[in-house]
Image (tube, rainbow, N blue to C red; front, top):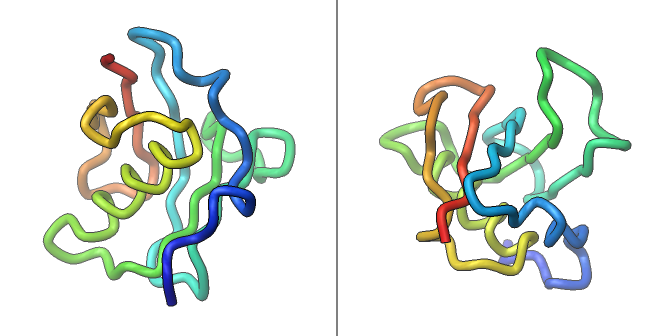
Length: 98
């Protein structure tokens, strides 16, 4: 399965605020890569986005896939996102650091 096309991802450019924190709920080993915005995501523990990735949660592969997918939806470089909390958790918090 390839990378999702840009048109298949929601436009999350509004989240690209310097120093802003983005809370996500991750589902690893999913059938496809997808990003669900806050309005469509199930409310759970304050997560504002629900992200599903096909990568397995081993050796940081799923976290790296989430970072890349979130950056692609925000139309920024993956290196501009910093993981603040949740390296081994399904609930992660990223910060936008341009």
